Image (cartoon, rainbow, N blue to C red; front, side, top):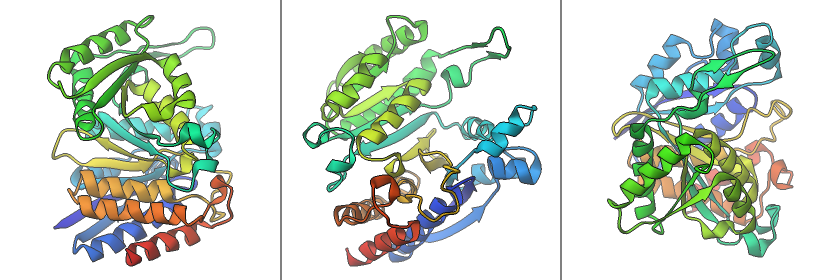
Length: 353
């Protein structure tokens, strides 16, 4: 088979971790006899510098015509400062590409890798066994609702339709079927009308999935549960804002946001977008110390969901796991390994396995 990937390195450490991930992807594709073609496009702050817009039309077209998109990271103080004078924000490109590609389901797996028990801020016995898939709705809610800007008053609407909730919920139910059969839906139904709709839709769909056990947890309680008994959860489905916050919390629970990968998916047959969930980390950009694991694990998700190559995806995940278990650590995990050293170790582990 052949695989066409559009690459959006973005800003800050984005180009560094993306380069690492592409080297791993190329090595696996060569080993598995998968034809790989990549093309690189401007995105985010880099695109603003080059074209004046965070999502140029040619970048959007390249993403829509690919089999998959690999993204680094966007944003930084330079563009934040410019935005105060009315310049576009790099993050606007993220919302734009998600909408253009119809990416309504964001999958964020978080599991504790062997050997990282002491990297968690939680006691080892509390974090042991944590393996959670967060399914976050990605194109609705407060991020996409109508906004009113102002210095004395501002509003952000949080709209959701039954259709929007149902399509992401089905992704989560299907994922739970293939895992441990438990789905936790997170909302704020005691306060928000959209959450009451959300809970109603989940309940209506649960009859189609008798093999999946469903429970509902309020978002503030869930934030607490993820640091008191994270290993109790399997698949978590929630709306856009809540999913953004909880998945970042969970990434810290299992050791570092630098390990966290994600897949953003739309309807079957359409390209997906894959990215580490960390930001552009401008404070360490160019120093060669960024953790590339989240980006490398994102290309594993790319192979699984956009190429149907489960064996290749698992090969990468085992290699990353082996390197971490051997004790190699980048700075975010308390070590001194460089981005290059970690990448080389993963490439060696791929060859050895």
